[in-house]
Image (cartoon, rainbow, N blue to C red; front, side, top):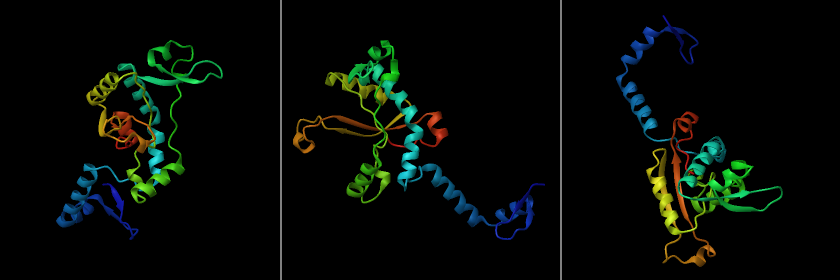
Length: 206
């Protein structure tokens, strides 16, 4: 039958003997079953920036495709540079696709600078990098609040998106001066598809 190496002994033993040893250790077997169930029930906690950035880089292309799809469904605008040396400007997906450059002209936001991520983790989260949720991010602009609401509806109805948190800085009672006058609606999501699950990045928050 199959053989295995006993760790620490260098000896070979049959698969049957290994089964008998495990079968006679119900306490160990129960502990291992509980441990594996717990691991499957919750994603592993991110404990390093290297791991966080590796996930973000692996997810980037899939996430951009999803942002493009969402923007197209609700008349959202993305920043694009049309023509040699031209300044970037906001355009709908339909306008971008009609241009010669197409989606290649879109100015996607880069991953968050490492230095800024370190400062954020240290100042806001006491060094816990797992709380930094904007390494991978993109922006969709809208001409009206109605279009923002349409976008939120698209996001909530998308079976591949899991909404983690929504931060609404458009609330009238919020003090705009606290954010230097900047207002937006930030939506934190997980992108759960067969591709992101295969890559092991379905738990990454964008």
